[in-house]
Length: 221
Image 1 (spheres, rainbow, N blue to C red):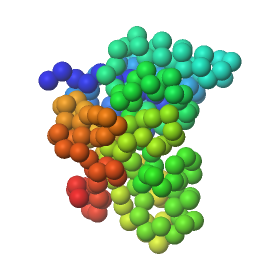
Image 2: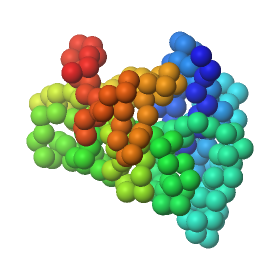
Image 3: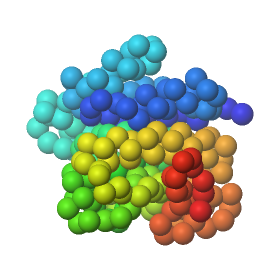
Image 4: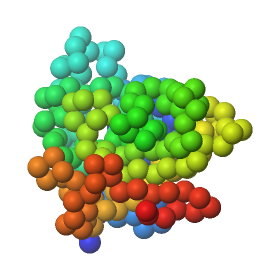
């Protein structure tokens, strides 16, 4: 089976990028053709170079507008002809023209159970609200922030002793499991977006995505 060609966009540490790199070593059928960061000091660039993945910095601050930044981003992405663009901690909102160009081929991971808590500081907000559950979501990208059709969610129980840091760590473990899983679905042709609806194995996925619970291991529910 041919590997799924991907380009990964990052802004920081690149922990989810590393999870994908590690999963590829274990047989995940992806071809990571390039990593692009909008931040020159992103540690994810180091991670990419360490395994000889082409890495580029395209800083939004070097361009006079979002349109010119995204034109440069698009030009670099298209050099690698990816089937899927993977947002892995990419902290820039993408405009409607950019998203339309790659419609159905951009996915993003977000540290909350969307539609709850789009945007930043999700762990802090979960604790402040006293929620009993938290988790991570993967969705197809639209031009609305964290609002595209949901593919998958992984959830865990919030413990009474949890802090913002402990929740962040635990949710990251979920992210590192589900992002390679979704990429495997794409690589095997099991997952598609059709008429703004998510299909897995030809079956319509619920609006909340495939649900995965974490309790001493992972299982679909």
